[in-house]
Length: 386
Image (tube, rainbow, N blue to C red; front, side):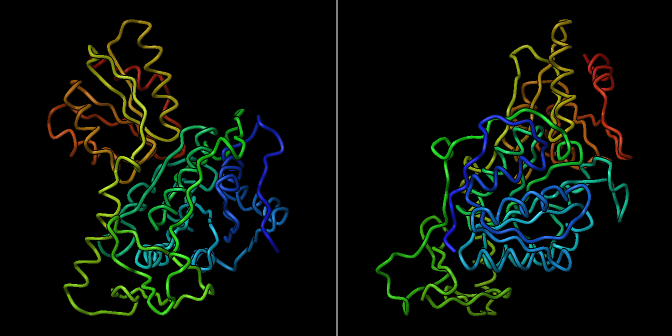
């Protein structure tokens, strides 16, 4: 069946963050979802089950989280834009195949609607406890792209960006929501096809001899063209280090070269990957650096504090990984204190401290038992440091 172009039914809708992820993915050209229902992400699976059959796409409810991750890898290898969704316990189960997708350079998007852990934890409570698992949850040195929306509108916009980044860099991308953002309802604008910039993976030249095709050919941008399985090109994939043909190569030189290439294809293009918003004035003495649902209280608090003449600004990360080290270092040179509210025991604050390198004092505010950080908590700390 030929896939139809997804067209939103309305331009403006009142919807929740999880459904906004579905809308954003469909707008970006996603045609395949596989996963396993899990709170608080189940509405994403429900949305795809409802919408994908209407455009000729495929929805698979798999037997477990591991199979869900494997299925989206297979669909992507066959040429489809593919996505899965889960929460913390399921995200842990997906790690091995997420590492495999990184090694064989398959574009996939993994949505993690975070809840309080560890283990089963509090299934219906918000958390930002999977930040470091996202970065370091797999074995070996490897890069990951992770985006974190702080609103329903950003859930839509950053899903589109996640799909585009995945396709452009042949790279898994993680979208980190939390229970609050996933279930929050806000009005958003759904863009028309003409308003959305879509990036499709680079393909081999149409006149290229299939016998000469190298699935991991070294290119100037370090991103090899990707042929679809079944399109006539010979294609071998392996989780072992491999040469340009895709076949295993046990040489240490190959292992180093490949790890460097996987790292550099992202780090040579950080300007296309790292997104953040900030409002820092030249005379601000403190800044609140935040992401996800914690950013809502942070920005609201700063805006109110400014009305009372407190010299404070805000900095909101949309890209969590790779970390915006240079931008945070610049922030630390501008202010005396950086406050980092997080719904965990203090994860991303470690990266903030490294980037600040003593130029600014870095203080955390943490909530990790299912409660949100309240604006008055941030306000009290601002008044203390200013």
